Image 1: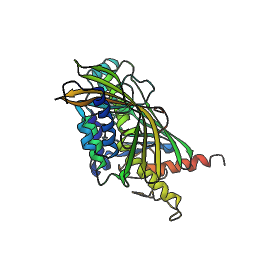
Image 2 (image 1 turned 135 degrees about the vertical axis):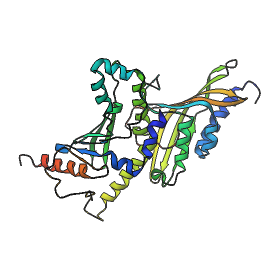
Image 3 (image 1 turned 135 degrees about the horizontal axis):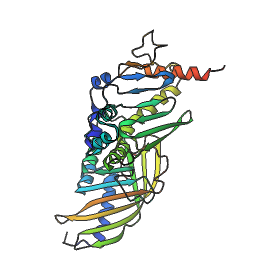
Image 4 (image 1 turned 90 degrees about the vertical axis):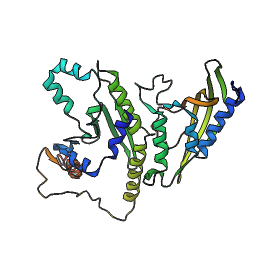
Length: 161
Length: 195
């Protein structure tokens, strides 16, 4: 990638990220995160604080790795049978770009389906990607997933929106 | 902090067996008498000093040395004292339960305590919790078993002894099902009260 990503490259990155999740190429997916990257799924509408207000998820790369390794485990009861997921994305919109600071923000409405055995659940969300460049490659500093029904009584969400 | 929260869940059988259960009257009780999964959390800087200023060193130590696992108030409240977290279990139908999770901020205490409380809530209690996923899977499999007519009894006689009824405020083995029997005894008592 040339020094400055085009809008299309930002869009392609977000689409590719969802594809890796759908194909459960989770180790490749984790590589998309910068070393200090986080995945955040707030529990409150318009939540601004991930640390002193609880969330559905606020995980750094280590916690994401634990989560991914666990999904592969033989004694992971809740993954026998395994879950599958499916993303439908609107075209990501580039909300902010700071070429000098290497900071880019995209906003993407998402429909996410998670299924396991006879159960299938649909979630609607907005994904906000805060991206940066690491050694010339786009990486995620923060992926924020705001569920439309973030504050509802939810059942298990086992994979990644 | 996350490692301190997750790691004790993989403790040995002996760890949970020896942590003990205290069985109270009327279906109440708590796990974690001598120690618990919360025992080895790092001290939060400044908190002990604040507690000492408020209670004196001896009393502050007594309060902070109490590291229970789950305190259960019959019939449907579960409290985690060491991390200021409460769960409320609301039965809605035979196959439907709403679990509410409440986190508490200690007035004037360091923010790190609240940070740990909400992190525990995310990692263990949330619908996205990997611990919760496996727990719920086991509950749902048990529920499927109960819905079948294969066996009309649920076996909770682990470490039963005939002299249990009538004993009060007893400390027992961490893997005993005495506390479960205690809850059903309380249920039978309250359901037949005045009958």
